[in-house]
Length: 133
Image (cartoon, rainbow, N blue to C red; front, side, top):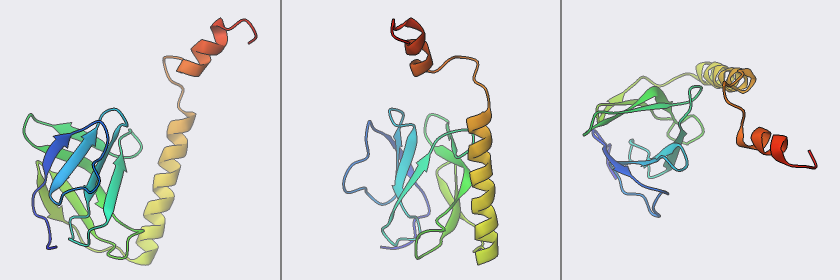
C-alpha cells in the first residue's frame, strides 16, 4: 500500500472490518474516528473525539482532525495532519519528543477528568432517583 494524500469521510455506527485505505470512518455513536495509517503500513488508527484528544470538523464535504496524528506506538511512527480531507505530513519526532508529547496528552486527559461538568452524568442522575441510593 502506498502513502495516502487525501481521505474521504464515511459516517458509520461502527468501524468496518477491514477498513479501506483513504477513508476516515466517523462514529458519532462511539465518539471516535478510525482509519488505516496514511503511511500505507496498513495499521488501524483510532482517534477518540474529546476536548482533550481529537476534535473533528466537517464542512459538508471534507473532514479535519485537530491535533496531529502521531502514531507513536506503531512501528512506522508516522506523523501527519488531516486538514480539509488532505493528509499533510509532519516531521518525525525524536523519542524524547514522543515521550513528552505522551506525557502532555496524559495530563490533558487527567485535567479533563477533573473539570466539573454543568450536567450530572447519567449515573449520577440515576443514583438520585433510585430508592436504595
